[in-house]
Image 1 (cartoon, helix red, strand yellow):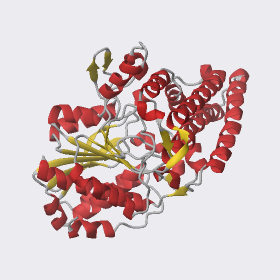
Image 2 (cartoon, one colour; image 1 turned 30 degrees about the vertical axis):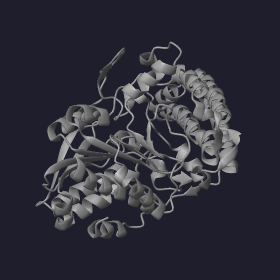
Image 3 (cartoon, one colour; image 1 turned 180 degrees about the vertical axis):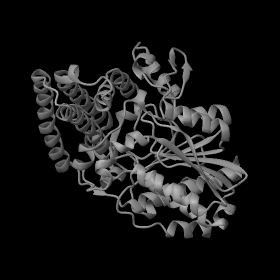
Image 4 (spheres, helix red, strand yellow; image 1 turned 120 degrees about the horizontal axis):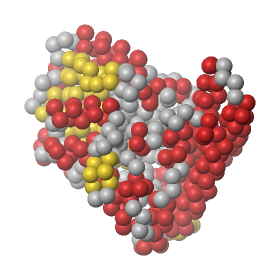
Length: 463
């Protein structure tokens, strides 16, 4: 890597917390005011709650690049990378010239959703605090999964304002490089890319290894993933998911199961041949996620055990939600999320794939066993927190308005109490099963920025 990029990476501060939406907006306005010669700030649209979506334009290179943080609002690692990167771009003409891109940067795309995560952004960074204050919207409410699509029997055109704003920005600038700044919650580092770029895979691995953050050699997050190399996958799009469900779904209509639209990488790739990179990284990890040695368990057995547990857990969450759902606001975001994340349909398809794929007849690696039997529980655990909050927000609303409805309050309180206990029990279970460590924010920013620089340089030479 070039020395100018090494110097940039070496200067990352030891961040101790994540920024709020208001803190980022203030920072962007200040940056534009301090560097009017190379920084422009404009409003690309508004959120559903009417908050302005701010976009920074920095530099005047020969290609356009687009970066956005919080495509999912529980994923703010990219916001801190963008805080650091934008400041250095504005202050360092040599860096701008070396990169030779015009940068369009949206620090927090799902700003409304990020506000619903603000209670954990400043820490403490524990499984309990993260899950208790976690929010991730249902698919049909996600800014990066509500792009319009017409594919076979899937027709989605219920595009939300944030997605419409990003579509217009993409249409206006036709970016050659998009960095979609997602991050995982638990596990290790892995990547999604539009096309293979094997020349830099080792450098991407090295970026993670240099920060002592493990690479995720466990199961892919979706069974429809196509691997280019270990922990490096082809970008997911809704057409890939549709074809997977069509192949393994046993006759189900994939359009009935999916219920959302497409994503920015598919939209920009189809129209402008844009290359999109995602570098997924965890807040928490366990060393077992990188262990490639053979375990004592057949991979198929571990994968089926995971699905059995997830099906039981989804049934419990749906049963608990049924106690009070009739009394909830139909647009309660936590309720909508729980409904979406406990929806059936894809488990049968995954079981069929597992039965037919010979790779699952082998012994699982320690990483695959851990991913199936422990790490997967973490992600379902987050729905416990969302269901707890679904009831909590309705109870708080009753208190605020003075609403007198004993039956409603009793139902909400009953479901809330059930979830308080279930959430604590699951916290205790995970704390006993997982020897987790919290990754310092500085290391995560380093990995994400390093991989972005590597890809930006690669694209200049090969595309």
